[in-house]
Image 1 (cartoon, rainbow, N blue to C red):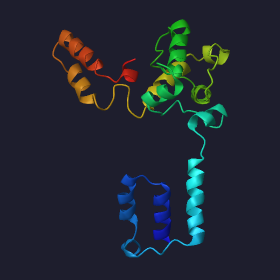
Image 2 (image 1 turned 30 degrees about the vertical axis):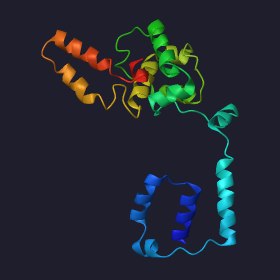
Image 3 (image 1 turned 135 degrees about the vertical axis):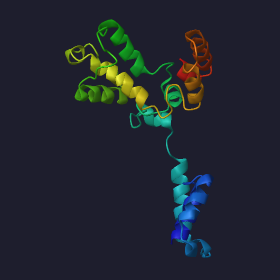
Image 4 (image 1 turned 180 degrees about the vertical axis):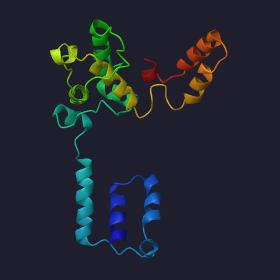
Length: 199
């Protein structure tokens, strides 16, 4: 049964080819060595049904138009998120930084933490593809929650803003002997960032 189910899933395309090796490692030897039985009429119909079902799935765009699929904001790859949203800079950062520049020039704006429930409320609104009204009293009275939300966004990026790939170069740059040399090296590494991260 396990051998048959695996063969059906592989034929239908549930697993990419690079996963087959991993699957085989986990399947007992007795199963992988067994000769698969011919596919019966009933199972042939199942394969046909699954193929038809997979081909007739609506596109991401159609699901978004119907409001069924929502693009994640937090914890999503920066380049992928910007591609899907059509923005140059994430809306969450644009809204929050504009608000902070207008209302949040206070001590420790990016150091002190906001109230957790306010941060989560803001996060939920942005994740629901809404642009919350940051001028509400709840946020004006807890300006630090907006700064905390920005930090949360950066912290949850799968690939950090300065990227894993350039980590060593940034590390070397900040270790330069003089301020002038450090500035030149950091500037040089920043030019190497992928466009979404650079912006």
